[in-house]
Image (cartoon, rainbow, N blue to C red):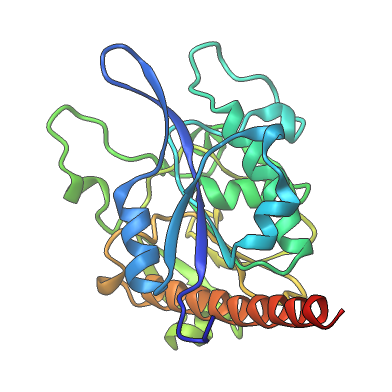
Length: 270
């Protein structure tokens, strides 16, 4: 394999019910796939949410990057010591059981991670942090949920809603050369207690953590609360983050390929 081969990026699927028969499917939004292919310049692979039956070490050894996307269901509170959800709250235990250990395994192996919306929440929980069940119910916080009226359009759902302040001297500020950007907002949950291993990269005017990175990172391990996959070509920071993630995935691919070549040579000589 040459350095011109594109890296392989796993996108963790959500388990969704499709059609009137409520047939379960492992799926992700087309925008997630398109963003990885176009703006990270990588080969996207939808990884089914197989939970404990997934061979983590085997998966991690074969991929060059991991994308954790948004999703309708929220991370269940027993993973971070929160109060139980109401009975009608959408949940996705298979994705929880897949994404949370996968985050830890990828960090241990220096596999690049890009977490988006639910993805930043999964990263925080996987590393020991906690979540607000509903941000808008917390005193002093705004309503960050998407509009839900019957005639809402995709343009309205994903429109830019509020600014976020970028941490001075942080990765995000360096990527765009600005102290603030405006982002969309489609989330009910949000970070409460930040995991010790994460550093804040962006914060909303009402104090919601909107961007994080891994402290002492060996590669690219970043999460954002907004939907960065929505038209990255029109959002300087979104595009820059996908580009940086893609560069880290290519570096991982080159290192993995060289390692495989050395093992093959050793086996042949032996």
